[in-house]
Length: 266
Ligand SMILES: Nc1nc2c(ncn2[C@@H]2O[C@H](COP(=O)(O)OP(=O)(O)OP(=O)(O)O)[C@@H](O)[C@H]2O)c(=O)[nH]1
Ligand SMILES: [Mg+2]
Image (tube, rainbow, N blue to C red; front, side, top):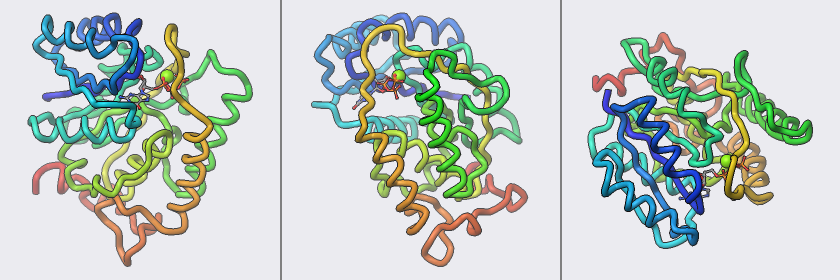
């Protein structure tokens, strides 16, 4: 299966090359797309050097820090335009260990393959060993809140390590996505699930970045919280099935209702 790994970067010079090396050692058949937002530390130039050496790595340069959500949407569009069957989201900071790529590919393969595979910290085998009790509480609590408020059966809907089937993405209203940070991940997971697509979680141990700085802000947390509340009230504009004008949990098809009709091209 032709797979593209999208890696958004903002000041990740110390991480990019070892990450790319490790990805290609684990899954040599995948292609990579680095989306750099005019990093000041030379990440964009390094990505261009890597592209010159590695034909399977492409680079998109954006003029400024435009946010994670728009970077991934650009990556999804690239995957669809270039015939990739699977598209991955992956952070550049080694929090998302490339060793899990094979488990993702396994879960996405075959006739029963998932349309969205989520790397989950909140199922058996998943963990966040480096986090303080407070950070665990905020992330774990945020996930319980999103799950309960939206009624989604996904344990880690804020996880940014995932793999989508592009045929499924193609049926969503991606032009309606407005969120950027954690909300972007929840919005996409919700739209996939609501649209009847098969979602599967594989356990990941999420470790803290080794070098560089986090770009997450309080604003991103608040966006996540208010997005869930708003969506609970108004529904998802992104899901392909949106009966009665609002997408409530009741409008979601069960797996037996042929959720893969779009994904299989029927
Ligand atoms: N292109 C692009 N990449 C971004 C932007 N913001 C963050 N990133 C990248 O997105 C990934 C995740 O960002 P991090 O800063 O690690 O955020 P996080 O993983 O949620 O937070 P930490 O747990 O603190 O690491 C990294 O690869 C960043 O370089 C952005 O605006 N544009
Ligand atoms: Mg990170």
